[in-house]
Image (cartoon, rainbow over all chains, first blue to last red):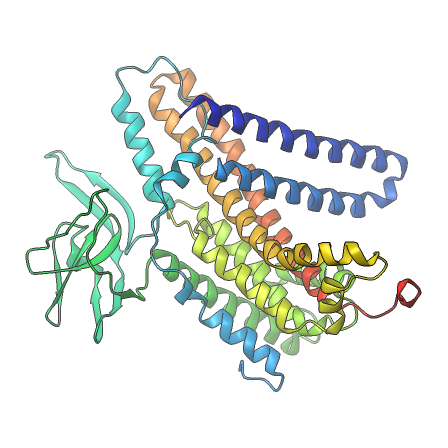
Length: 63
Length: 380
């Protein structure tokens, strides 16, 4: 396994982690502001996280 | 039962019925499995002398990810080093100037040449090649076999599991449906567990995304949700089946979503792709090919998302279980065991989540195809 492949995989994980982390953070802020909307916020958070994970995995397999 | 008055139902039902034909036994390319090992857990650095355990684990994982022609449950070596295989063979169906049907036990796990109606076939690297009576395989410069491969419609392990899940779903949901009539409007039996899930798919996935003609898509959305969920869950059992981790199968599912989106879309869908409202004309010409490409990329991402999640989950889980065999002491193996347990719990969540995401995104694409013409202000 060459070094550039490993570095690329690490960058992909950083990118996906940052993206999903930001979504999780804003989801938590939103739930803290309005606890009764937590169902909808959770749903939207999971959808956005799955989309980001999708491109993350696609890139990981292409590397 | 499936030939209803509405042609759409018939199209969807026939597409799902021929879905098993989309999945031939296709071994992954070596490069795909190599990059899957990037996601694997890190091997500990102090194992110099135990490289055969590591390579055995790698070979085991690779074999798990591939499809196979017989259902091999496990094998064990008795005291005289004789290996016993526990499992059952599956039928092999080939079309090669005539129909050849025989059991995969004729291959004896890849050792012997199978003969059927005068043609000889040999299993090499999980693919069936046509050979002569001695089982000669001709190689080209890169060690690839150049024999002819017959058309392969075999019932492989994945096809068998898809049929099992299909019959399971048929029995489960038809008995759930019949129990309403017998019990005055309330479900009775094991299927009661699925009623809130079905209502959730209707109320929170179909109606918000599709709108008022959600009913014609409900059968597909329900089928795809439970199909993907049950197959993901079967992949986590010790049976060692890996159906949704096979890119041919996820490609088939994504292709059905794409066909339904394309053929049940109304005029607004194509209008919005090629001539989107509210955008200045030079931009429209630039955006039209991108939007057209987007119609293909969206189902493509459905395929990749499901495939990559399931394969990555299996590879990581089996690597951590393999760590138990590399650490041969109390502390390392028990820590690996608990980590594998926690990861298996996460994989159960991922199984349901990926089914939900697939269904939700399919509903989103169907809804995009059925948009009403209600933004006249932005039009020219």
